[in-house]
Length: 465
Image (cartoon, rainbow, N blue to C red):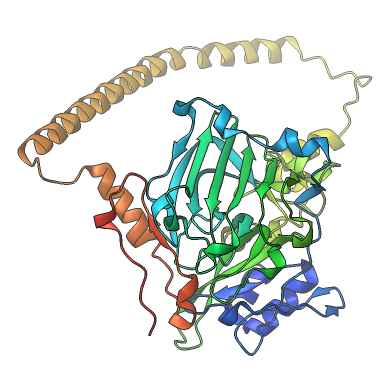
């Protein structure tokens, strides 16, 4: 394996953080089984070659100041015309185009999965499902857990909102195929309901642009209490990796690394203000070695020929990048992966040198050989075609037999769960088990609710000890 893979497996977390920091500016780490006690935030002290992300005494790591590597953004005040352009008036749309989420509009600390009608690019990764939370944010991770507030989010205003307080408080959304908008409408802060209602929205454009729009902000965001719930505004993404467990020498622990975060100046959030985020090109968008290594719009990219992927090694595919020895492959050039091409392009053809003319005997001998070689392929072609046809017929027969067997099984077992549902359950329960967190901070736990499920099938969050 490459040097990065060896570091992942063999070095301590402190050494790992120091080495990765010298190569990339990687952000905050959340360990499986550990949370952010009290949501304390500690800033990095600059170190030579990067930022140290070694764990702090409270099992948290330092946070990297945003590098504007993935997004650029602009803020707009109440007097800016762009503010009105960015606002999406859901009241002006037809009722069939706007959906009020009944569950989220009547609960506290709940989250529901919603499918988009288009692939949305987030940090270079194309996502088709998101999770909307009552707390004023969208969870963008693929693996759900109770600490949705930690990382991998789009947060126009993450706070302890309780839509169940009033019938006027709703969470509604709209999707027209090019734009997805979710709006937290007249929501109030838990136990601070008398301070007024908030109205704000997040708009996700098909091209990756994100807009935060604020219509009613009754109190300054800096005065919102973060004791019971984190208060965040911005974007965040992370990757997962497996590290050796300190408790068991032969076990590995899944670790979440928040490699980038966009933090917004909350003093600029007032009524009728807005933020617009524009995505920047990433290495992941390149689909060939040449584009990966020669593009002028990205930097630091390497090509992994085994995975046929362009990356700088810091994205959601980090673990796979290490498992397939991509850090070593990324040091190569495109010619290294195509030696034949390289030889052809570097060896000039001398057209001025005349090739020797074959003698009559040589020409006759070549003609006889070519005649002998053209007879057998016809017979071979017939045999090969027959084999292909027989294979296709056999495959079709097997497919028909499996279909009939499936129909028979469903008809004779009407109470059995559909196979697709079983696969979904296997994927969610076995292949990607939910992460367990200690109850040091139960107040920030969220319960995910599948879209369309009724309240009686909710799995409530675990109670604090």
